[in-house]
Length: 394
Ligand code: HEC
Image (cartoon, rainbow, N blue to C red; front, side):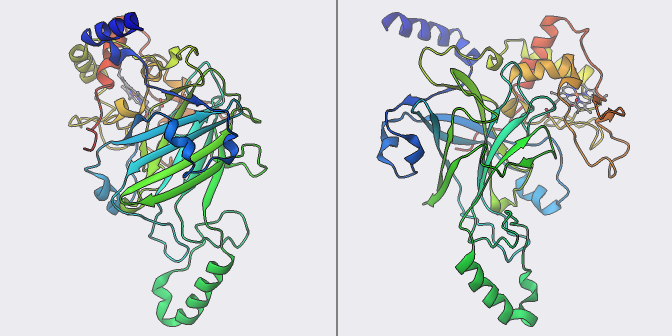
């Protein structure tokens, strides 16, 4: 133990601790976790660990009000506790949010606070953080805070909404509609999805990926629970595996891609589990990376104050260091088509296609591969990109 402490101290003096991947250690418990809830005393035993979530800035949303509301966003800390009983994994997440926002059925402009956790169906590569990628599907569990939701087709249609501006003509109908919702509506919007990339999110309706989810707001803090099996139709979580979290702030009109997102974080089911090499950090010369980035990349990518590239040309990398892992960044430079970020609606931005696709639908990135860069230059670029992120909210 003493030697371990000495080694850790030595490593932190060398600045090496930043090279170790962020990880969550699941506390093993005997209790059946399918019964654990937000208020279970079991949580008091688990250690709190923190995960940073960063504003996803890849694409600019087509909603000026939303863009304005999120301009000055900082990163947030998710306080995470993790339990496992050998059959299920349970997460308790807590984060600060000054306002409680609920998604309602009678407003088209109110968005709910929410959270999601995603798991990778592949173990040798990292899927695209924003919803998986081709051949690297993710399972996403999502909950939005709602008032009571009326689902006319019983299919989770929270977008079926009644416009309050119709109040005058239909006040009576609206009141009776609200009463009906209160009587018959479901309390929560919770769904499981499988996704192989942006806009391929498909709801899983057959309970193949069961999950218990809960959200509770108290004094400026959201607490959220997710319990799911380690083994299911699409996942077999064992040893160490990656997980990523996202949160939405309804007050800021956050929805869909507009959210705060973590990088892939390792979860260890037992202390002996080997850390995931995929999540290792990469060391490099940040200032040389900055120079290389200006020379090779700034014609297409905007990042922070560097705005040489036209809007819509390529992903905005201002927060890429917050939600992308080093191995993903390195792969993005050498082999851009390994994971293709779909980008904007191709009809709306014809001149800025992020990919082309052949008759079989296989996508090729319009970013040229930089496989000719030597190892040092690649590492320097990655090290610089890892610094691209906003500060964490105090
Ligand atoms: C010709 C324009 C162009 C150049 C030059 C270019 N990129 Fe890209 N880049 C793109 C496009 C378009 C995408 C989105 C499609 C994709 O995923 O490959 C992208 C995607 C990326 C991504 C993934 C972003 C995300 O949100 O996941 C990273 C990281 C990246 N580029 C880094 C770089 C770096 C580093 C350089 C310079 C060494 C560079 N790019 C040069 C056009 C370019």
